Image 1 (spheres, rainbow, N blue to C red):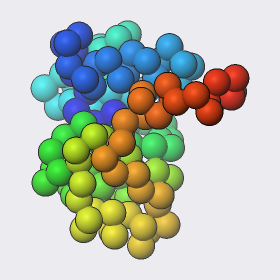
Image 2 (tube, rainbow, N blue to C red):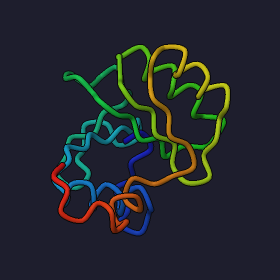
Image 3 (cartoon, one colour):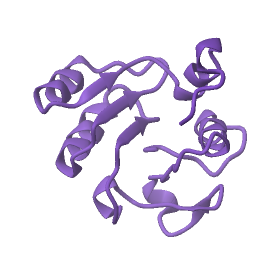
Length: 123
């Protein structure tokens, strides 16, 4: 989760908390919090610093910043770039799709998981 916050009132914190509760592994990325923990998870300065494979990058940054995050995501070989609510960057989406990466924009995985069709579905 790029743009993860240690502040409990922030949307990224709430989203991360729900994903963890649902059994997903979430790795927070925030240069200002690197080396600290958020919700018990070690925080990294960048995607490149993560020492294990990453399936999906959840972007909690501005639409403009999503391009750079997407470039980093491509470099580490993710499968999905997910841009949060109100985050849309068509250039980033085209770049990711050209690299064979699935793209979701202007949606929140927390809200998607709360939709009724997910009830009873294993992670």
